[in-house]
Image (cartoon, rainbow, N blue to C red; front, side, top):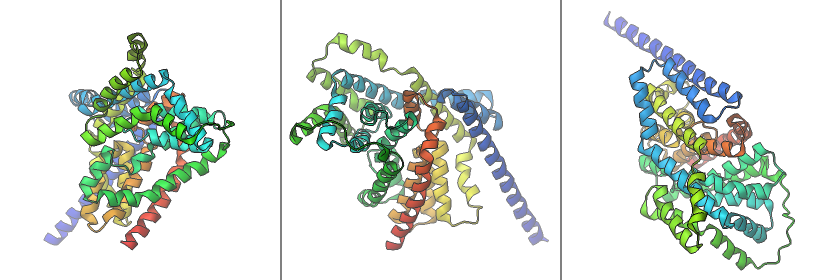
Length: 423
């Protein structure tokens, strides 16, 4: 009798979990459908995400008091302030670089150094992307525009600028998500970076195969200058970005705290007047992009409050597939709905508790999933920035990115498995 009752109880728990899974999946699909539908009407990303927030509040029955608290947490949190301050400071630096013609100088120096449009298109955003800030993508955009001209569509230019700017986020420990993941997994930093290098090559090649090869190699410029002169011009053009990165790495401080002293130094060395600087205080304040940042941060708070992110591993564990695939799915879906840090905090401790011998191979798999998912995630701030800049919809960028996402998921999965066999 006891055994029968216990079996009945287990069956009821199983049925309850399955119903909970079905309801959460339906609710999540409705939330993302709301975001997608609003995007289809060519509304800004901030409006689309706000629609998703509204849907989540209704579907999960979040009361007005909690709603106000979540809006306050998303709007006034330290993370939101740091993002906005980082974006503003980087945009301000960009305005100064443009004023002195240093972005154009860097593009010309790359042209003369390699005399190859394709290399310029890939390398310039990658170098600028070493700076861990959302605003860095806007520094890369004009260089890509000059290299690509009209050989790629506006949507393809948007993709290329964003994609190559973000490759460094897949492996460099200058990014908080990588540092968090390494800390949670106890994987050696150097081992991870070295193991990820083949995947970095793959990322460059995938972008090249799908889009960059459409661009002619020849820049149409006859190179007459010496290589050392062009290297010197690149240093003159980009030293401010390099110094900002160095300060962030050495002193482990917020991006805006590193960039502000660089702005002051750049102001002095390049002999700016106050009249030149004054308009930049206003122009660096991008209202639409800051609104998108705040709304996305609120969206993350709301999703966390619903508990769907925390329940994902339990739901996926019900599937009849290997645990390593389950955690890869958790990492991918987690990044899609909660961002890279949220996904790393969720997936990595659970994965290494379940697969303690996963080592660097498991880390490569999880971080590859998180990285590539972020390239189509509506909570990724940079995607809001770059789509606003080029005037295209988020859906159009996702369409251009999906072939890369599918290819990279397959290749990185195979590579991680081979890496595990060799461990």
